[in-house]
Image (tube, rainbow, N blue to C red; front, side):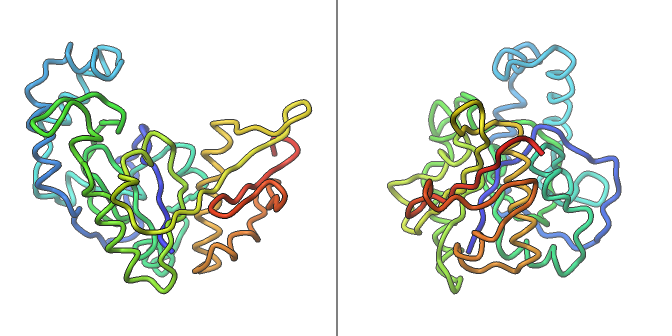
Length: 258
């Protein structure tokens, strides 16, 4: 199985990585094309484009200027250790050992507006570029058009080499939309996390994000290789809900926030 995850806006480049193993991002040349477009924008244009405050826009303009095609120990960090949002709090990769991270490297793809796809140990430089950003380039008016079928084609290639060629989607709608469904050949299974609110169950964004990270951590610990194995996930009060699930959609529910 191959898991899909969204990146995070929050980054942690201050904490030293606890492992030295790193790989190079796959689509650096494409990322450099986007950096060139971003460098042509003024701080005011970046603020408007991304809905950022002036200080945040200035910080990201500086990041674009500092970005280099070649990563180093000084300017980059492994992606799964650099992202620092709710999903990554659930995964808690900084407490995974080298063998766990090696397994994750073989089974996780992080979708990225700038890099397209990042493997967990890819050396990533600080950036902010959400997939939904309407950044125009010679390839189209937004990032979905920029990446086209490249992400889907890569995922098909990766999945085909696996014993169980299936994608487990733990990414948000914004990021999964970057996977061209017309081009994608691999079967997809979506994981949904709901909790009871009054008389019905619904997805609560912040809690669902953490649950996605917890699910991925469970998969690492179990060395899961089939969707069936994921049904045993029971962290933070969630449990598999067979009556609400269907082919291609695994639903996990809990009665209240843990």
